[in-house]
Amino acid sequence: MDELPEHILQRLKTCTTFPTPPPVAMQVVQLAQNPEIDLGLVAQVVSADPAIAAKVMRIANSAMYARRRQSANLRQALVVLGLNATLTLALSFTLVSTLRRNPPRGFDFETYWRRAILSATWGQLLAAEAGRRDAEEVFLAALLQDIGMLVIDRIWPEVYEGIAPFRIEHNRICQHENNCIATDHRALGAALLGIWNMPANLTRAIRFSHDRNGSEVSSSDRSFVQVVALSAALADVWLNQTSPTALHAIGKEVDAALGIQPTRLGELFESIREQLPVAESVFEMNLFDSAMLQDITDTAREILVVRNLHVLHEKQDLERRTSRLEEENFELKAESSRDVLTGTYNRRHFEAALTAEFETAKQHDWPLSVVFVDLDQFKQVNDRFGHQAGDTVLAAMAALLRTCLRDSDIVARYGGDEFVLLLPGVDAIQADLVGQRLTGEARQHGALTEDGVKVMVTWSLGIATFDSQNRFACPKELLAAADVALYQSKRNGRDQYTCHPSRAA
Image (cartoon, rainbow, N blue to C red; front, side, top):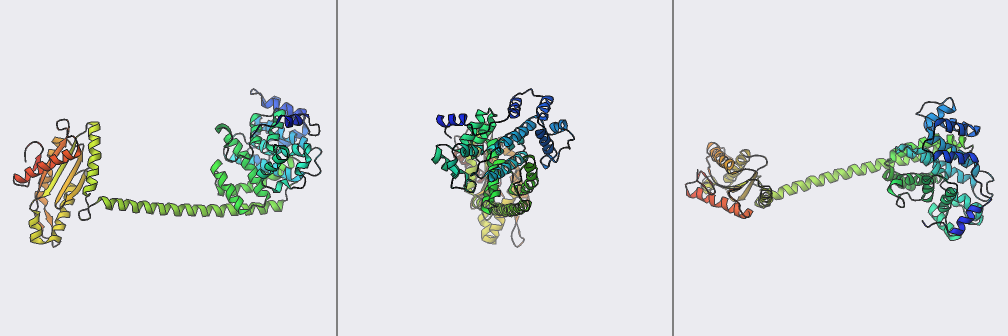
């Protein structure tokens, strides 16, 4: 937002028709800027104005602070509210009483204060719900965020002639003001509070009171500005009789900015209905009809709760569909990497796994073993019992391989009656033991055909290990070495294993 033009700033400073804060307000501002402020001094300033003292007592015992203990005197009220909160509230009372003097004739003063008090109440409630410790400061900032409109009406009354500013979207009001006087009520309000030497966070919140995303301020100030801006948006929704579309939109914004979900926001409408009469009484205004408050509360809660349930159902449905797709994708991926007949991995998956494990072994200097497995005389099984029986035997031998190895090992069908095993972290000595175990298990168990006929099937193995003594240049070399060892086992009579580059067993 651009700085206020100098000629407008001077006119604001020299305006004699706009009220200035009373001395007690200036004392409150000075006290608030003192980090070593004490309870006694605050009590002295507040008690000097009986009307303010009574209002502090009333608000300390009100629904706004219903969870805190009741206060029988001013000192107890100060303890309940806290020093900063007391000063902030006292300042709000004095400023409002000042601004209400000599109300303009054409400007919709009642609607202005209805919106201001509604915004302030929403601001305090949102800040408390979001866990902020400066709810009273938010209350004051939200209360005064449109003070620049009062300035415009006093200095340039023609700006609002012929329009109803509170029935127009607030950003459009700013455009109208800029067209008329080359500035808007946000800049004027912030400049006025700067002249009055008000706290910087208060001035900043008014200057950026339409920035519900907090995009125009630093990250440290963003949340404060957002709460103030959202309080005004909620006030507008309320004053426009809770349009469902507007409620859905603001509910989404409040959830995104403050983490207050729509269902909870619907409950806060009930809290607003309870707290507004308190704000009306302390500011000595009668602005809201109780029956209308109840109707708006019921409507807002119903819209927000129903909408939230709808969103939850959509979310749950989306999660179910996402989960189903993930399961289907997992199944498809598993199917694409598995051999249909044996349930082992296929050759493509094995080759990808070998490449990855080889790089890992090379990088960390870990051993890696590969074993080629070929079923001996398997053609005779097919010729004697048929190909269907042969498939059953093949699947049974694949299952036997899996039971003899670790879960981290990979068993893959390489083609026909040939399997290949990938053994990460297995050195040459351990690979030799694996060869012994596998040949022994085949001799002992054999396999059953579908007709229950036991078929004794042995296998020949070829083993190669990548380690400090055998530094293969690439995965293909390691695999080729295991293949050479396999054929050595077959040439030597089958039913045995051979470790590259050593002996047959």
